[in-house]
Structure formats: structure tokens, C-alpha cells
Image (cartoon, rainbow, N blue to C red):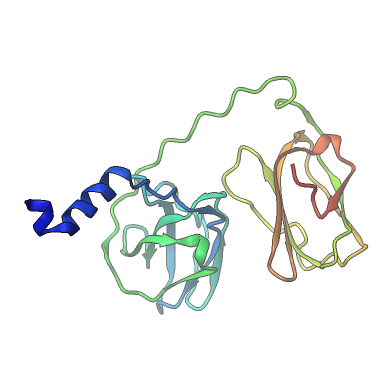
Length: 226
């Protein structure tokens, strides 16, 4: 009688039994943090929304003046992140933004809506480095020539060790690589495995992980899909 009087209840029960949760969205959560607070930002924290700790200060020994922006390079993966900035001084007033889908935005603006006093951030445990075999532990000269055989100009180039969490500086600096041109990217001798990311003038990116650059003389764009 219960389901005859309330047919919607039966539908809800069946939905609860058979519904499959949608997978968490994945993508590139990197973005520009813009300071429009009218004050100085001394610390910036970004952590996955599922994590309990803020992790390290991503500004390091820098500070972000009002009106300026700072590019946070975050690893490919989950899109939902929490952000915190600390104003004026270490331990000063803070502003938080929670559960942001960073894969869907290119910039996040902080305007000084203070959340509270920032507690001393706890350090997130760093994952142990992977056990390296003969190939993954190879060292040598990872420098290479970027050869642009695509139809678009390359505006940015990022190369970082596969063990690192951030992309680091744009290796092109003020240069660009038009179609049909080459650009030499010089890297220090050391580990061979790197992640690479190239951004075209239309905003699209070409990315590859764990490339043994010591075996590469010319890295040709567009990258061949694996």
C-alpha cells in the first residue's frame, strides 16, 4: 500500500539501489591567482578538496602585490581544490575559497574578504619517490630541440622532472616558436625523465608525461599520441 499511495518513493528506492556515482572530473587545474584585495598577499596554499592539510606555501619566498597575478602550475588530475591566501604577514588574516573546479577556470580573484586568522599550516606528507629501475634512474643530458611542425605558433613551453609537482618557468621566456621553426631548450645534466607541456596560440596544450629526454634530440610538435 505504501508504494501504491506514494509511487515516487519506489522510484527513489530503485534509483538509490542502481545509480552509479559519476567519476570525479579530471583535467588541468593550473590557473592564474589575481590579487585585487588592496593589500599584499604573503602566502598561497592550494590543496585537493579531499585533503586535510593545506600543504606548503606555493609563493615560497615571494609576495604578491595588489593588482598582480601569480600562475600556479598544478599537476593533471582531480579538478576540485581548496585555496587559501594569507595577507599582510605570516599568520595574518586569511581568505579561503573552497571546492573550486579549477579545470573550468583560468583565473581566481581574491578581493580581501577575510576568513579569519590563518593557523600555522601543517605540512602534507610528501609521497615517497618511486623505486627506480635502470631505465627510470638514467641520467645524462636532457637538452633537446623543439621542432614545431604544427600549424600554430607555440607560445609557452614547460619542462619539469617527472617527480616534481609543478611545471616551473616558461622555457621560451619572451620568445615564441612559429610553425616550421626550431627552438633549443637547454636543461642541466641529471635525471632523464621529464614531463613536457606546450601551449599554442589558440590556448590548446600538447602534453606528454615521463619522456626520456636523454634519448631525444628533436622533440617534434604535434606530439604523437601514445
